[in-house]
Image (cartoon, rainbow, N blue to C red; front, side, top):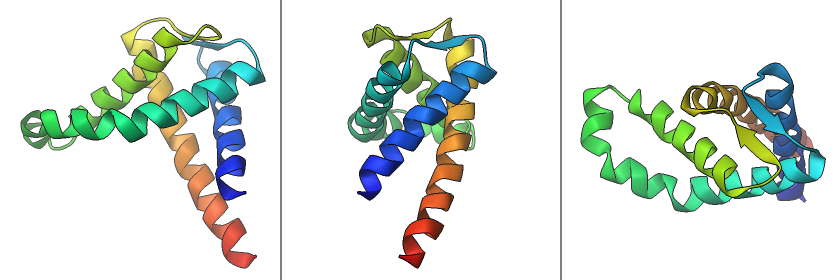
Amino acid sequence: MKIIVRWLLLAAALLLVAHLYPGVEVKNFTSALIAAFVLGLFNTLLRPILVLLTLPVTLVTLGLFLFIINALMFYFAASVLDGFHVAGFGAALIGSLIYSLCGMVIDVAMERAFARG
């Protein structure tokens, strides 16, 4: 139940990103659900490999390179989906930052909501 609620909220967050930033476009809520699933899949499968491969660069930049990796995941997800479009890498960077902030708020809210029950 918790995973489904988080997935729905992350899809809504993706729609919020598209509403707040014009460089990110999401066609409808169904596209947002699919995009949130693909983003989660990429972050689960590809991100750890990329973080490991770019560890020296990440250390030299004091972790700032992780923003680039997040933007790449966002951009890759948009490139493989039809209803989700990102205007360019800069838009992917800003969109991934907003999406990550929304994800952190969602995680905190879910912890509080499910800790009571």
